[in-house]
Image 1 (cartoon, rainbow, N blue to C red):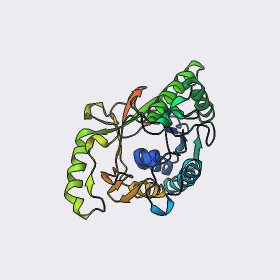
Image 2: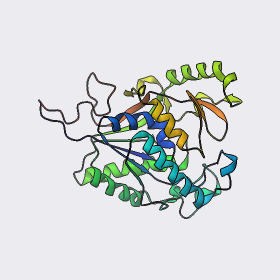
Image 3: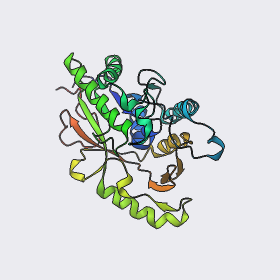
Length: 285
């Protein structure tokens, strides 16, 4: 068996905090193993709803700058040192929720030319040369314009890389098995009287919920859930955490998942190993 090459993981997300909610345990787990973990965030989340009353004066560019500081703190909690903004900080602006006038802002990420933005990401792919890329499904997990656009840009960048002989061996989409989400919400509803929020979200509010048959990989985050929770707390403008649950600005409680789940959509799946995004990559006899 030859020595395995350096393993490199790239994650593409829409706003600061998406990475910690969706992949915080995964990022911490792989960073702890010596994998080079790179995060690309496509906007600064300038239109996020601010939870703490003493920070509600923040909006627009000022909020974006503050959220960049939150992202730095979150990455420190996860042990990740390589994190970037697509095209540089502020190049693409938060587009707001689908159907709002903010979607039409000239700098909104939703309006960005996909090939141009994918070219920005291609520069990162050329530098980092990740074997594995993680992003959203075509619906962006729950239909947010920036999440949908992040999916489009990530998938297009992978295509452009392949055209010049630079292969991303596997692409995964974020997922949560429906049975896992159902069980977590059943526990949540039993615990709800002790939580600071009035009621729980619904399973359908969790991004990426699908039937278990579509989930190819589970990353065991049990040893890294504390780091994930700390990273989520770092995004204090957007998230309140009361482990093992959290809430966004709508004050609807959701499960904080320790294990994180993925669907392999590009590349070959390693036989017999459904708990490692890199299983079999680089191995030769």
